Image (cartoon, rainbow, N blue to C red; front, top):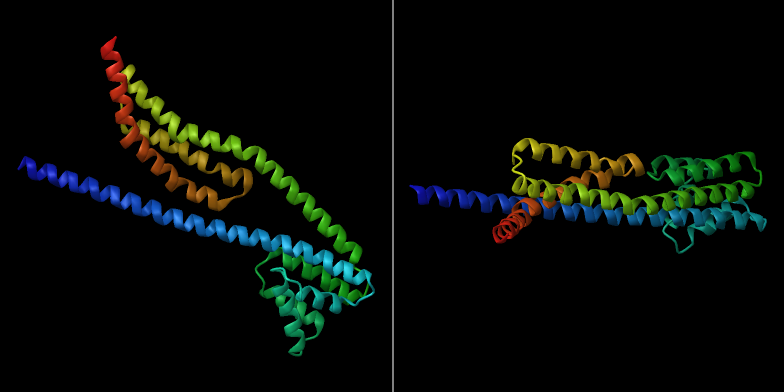
Length: 246
């Protein structure tokens, strides 16, 4: 009976490990997909800024706004697809202003909607909007640069803090239970889990990065698993052997 019970426990442990590994793998693939999407989105935002400058440059060459937008639709950047939609709708019978508004309403890009608002105001007022477009692109570039600088400076510190909470704190606690006889109970695990939860929200609070906060938790739980199941026994054995030789 004991052997059967031990085998069942071993099988359950194998199943739990397999489920944990599957969850981690799926989470990593989803995280990778989101990172690729963010990279594509960031590239598109940069191309949209470039397109603003191209439109402004074309207007300064005494071209009409419609001609400038048509030139932007023929550029090799990823932003050209938005302007192609405007020209396509204009060719279907909508006026140029209606085409801009229609495509802007269908777009999910906030940056492109802002650009469309500027183009619409320019088309309605029939004024030279090149200066406004130049100012807008410079302000966006400045804001993006400040955001990137802030994130670069804070990312290293935040990563180190995550490592301390997820890896170092549990190892220190296990060390304390072995050396000082502190209780190894669920309350301590809950406290460490709560600390991990709070650290996970730092990406959301500091960078407004929802994806990093959401995906941090499965990776953190996996790190806990490695620490408790793999590293902790090695640490305890090392401590006991060290104490035994003293």
